[in-house]
Amino acid sequence: MATNNEIERCPWCGTDEIYVNYHDQEWGVPVFDDQTMFTFLVLETFQAGLSWITILKKRENFRLAFDNFNVDAIAEYDYVKVEELLQNEGIIRNKQKILATINNAKCTQKIKRDFGSLCNYFWQFVNYKPESHRPRYPEDIAAVSLLSDEISKDMKKRGFKFVGSTTLYAHLQAAGLVNDHLVKCHRHTEVEKLGKVDVRRMIKKVNSKR
Image (tube, rainbow, N blue to C red; front, side, top):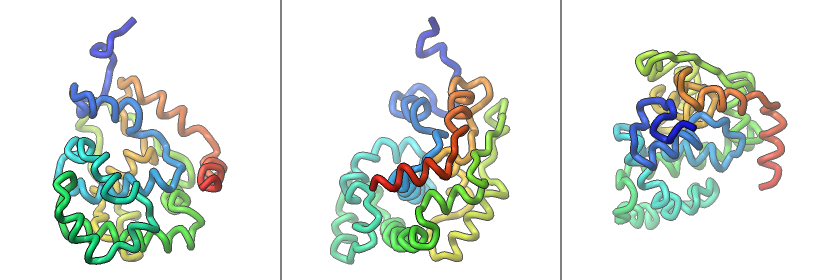
């Protein structure tokens, strides 16, 4: 039996336990739940210009600071809450990103009214079927794509902030709309199988429980 160190993984996760667990359990897994989709969007907003591991290590702090990533609660944040967040050493204390998160929560509320759910909005761009890429080497993985360009442009028109193409592509990877695990990575096939479901039905089922 292969040991944990012998398992083939995408090299970007290194050996840090937090990063490895994220790679093995979350990255690329198709997201059908609006709460999770919005959570990743918030974290990607704060990640802009920083390393993802920095955000992962602070994720629990973000969860506590941002009302468990509750869209409706965040949309109601006022200047008092903003000042409170700016004093919170457990998160990234960037005022522009904090204000962008509040703004994006309000935009997400409208998206949910217009599309039924945030997941419906994102998944429509891939016709409710994950794009399964087959990168052989790390350099085969893009930082942006025509897809992320399209979604970024559309989201900006809808008023979202900090949603450049690079940020959006990272979001698509994290939320499983694209599978960018290397073909030799043990998660490539596993994630591919997870995407072979009726995505529309899954979105409706998961979000109807909320």
